[in-house]
Structure formats: C-alpha cells, structure tokens
Length: 318
Image 1: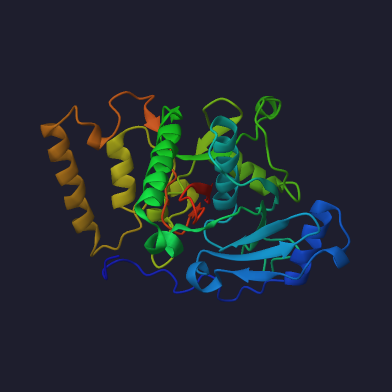
Image 2 (image 1 turned 180 degrees about the vertical axis):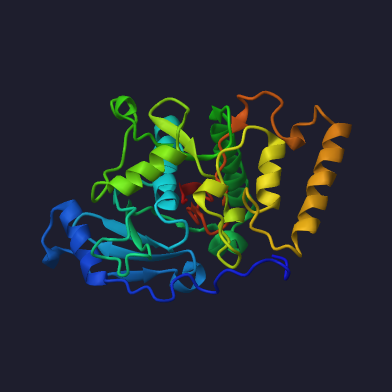
C-alpha cells in the first residue's frame, strides 16, 4: 500500500454487533437438532484472521461444523462469489474443498445488525487438519515432499478449469441455468429483488454449468485499508493487459488518489513495453482467449490444512 493512496478503514468490524445466539440457532435449524444438542460457539483463529472473517466452531452430536462470519467488505458479491467458487471447484475436481450447508449473503438476517453492514454466516463442514503455517517448521523432509506433491496436484487440477475471461465466479440467477446440473449450496433466505437485480446486472457472462463471470474477488482489490472498489469497478476482463490495469488502478474507473495514479500509470506502461518485447511469453497471461485458468486468489499458509503426521493436504479454504 502506498502512503499516497486513499485510505480505507483500519477495522471493517467497527460498529458490527454479531448475535452468536442467533448464529447457534441457525446451525441447529440447518442440521435439525435441538439447541440442547449444539455446543456453544468456540472461537477459531480470531486474532490471526479476524480482520477478514470471524470463525466459530460448533460441536454437534455427530460432527463439528464451522460458522464463518465474513467481514462487511463488498456486500453480497464477496459471499456469493466465495460460495459459488467452492461449489464449482468441488464439482469439477477432487480437491478437498469444504461443503457449504447454508449461507446468507444479505446483512438483514438475525446474525447481523445494521442494515448497511454485512455479517454473513457461512456454515461449513468442519475439515480436519492444522494450518500449514502452524505445522511447517515441525515437518520432516518426507512430509514436506508429500505436501509439495499435493500442492502440485492442486494447481494442476485448478489449471484444467478454463474460461474465456477473468472474473469472479457466481451461480447464475437466470431461470434456464437454474435448471442446470450445477450443485448449489442452499441460501438461508431468498435473495431480495435488489440483490437479484445487482447479481443479474453484474454477473452476465456465462461459462456454462450454471455459472457466470462477474466482479473480481482478487485479494489485491479487497484490501480494506484502501478504498475497496465497487462491483461495477471490478467487472470481468478479457485480456491480460485489462486485468493488469484493473489491479494497478484498483478498479475501473480508478480508485487511486491523484497523487498515486501517476505511479500506477508508469507500472502499466512498463507492463506494455515488456509485453511488446515478449509477445508470446505466458508470463503475461494467455495468448488464447479461452485460456484463462481458475485461480484460488489467496492461497497462503493459513488457507491450507494439512495432516501433520503425513504432510498431506486435507483441506483448502477460500
């Protein structure tokens, strides 16, 4: 982040009051059990990842589930895109992606508070393992070798998923695509007419299987310390240069400050110059329009779960 950029917020959770009793009640309703059979919410990694999400686990009679409360950044689109991406990857690969049993992308639910602020519950299947970052130093060479091979397989399977554009992935809201084979996680409540209008107006580039490309969810453009560009400023791109410009300018139209914008323009000029020197290099993106590959977008050691005994990857979080 440049000190010349427009400043966002230090903590997106300021002013948000989460109702954990309501969250526990929703978990019970999703799994159809009485409250007496659902343990209290237990905080998971609150200090480390609290800025982007608050995570709680609930012990049920036959399983442990996790409720992830998403920070109120990019309302509606962030959660809709996150759930659709997990469903898409789980349906088209063998990767260990969590199952979303229910979700709500509207802040006006029992868990949230003010109508302007989203605190969406994302009830996920609990995944075994420990975070890679917590276990790495204790792994021996054979375990690290197993992890490396698993990681290669992750990227190999993701790169087999292609599209003719670069954007976030969303479930289609069109009636014909609703009858497709896409396996969807159930919404806790129906979309409002306004939410439906927003999704249809921003997510309208079909990639088949009941999915659409829509506003990008790249982590570089969801830095709440900066001004977070709106969905209409992060629409899908169809060339590597368009994507580079979108990231450099933090949206289109740009959200960079007048002081910082010239620096970003220089970066774009440098990209264009080098691209002209090496027009066939894959480092600058696909040469064919249908060769945009699926990417996690934020794959770091806190989003990968492993078995500390074997080093095998047991889960990939969004």
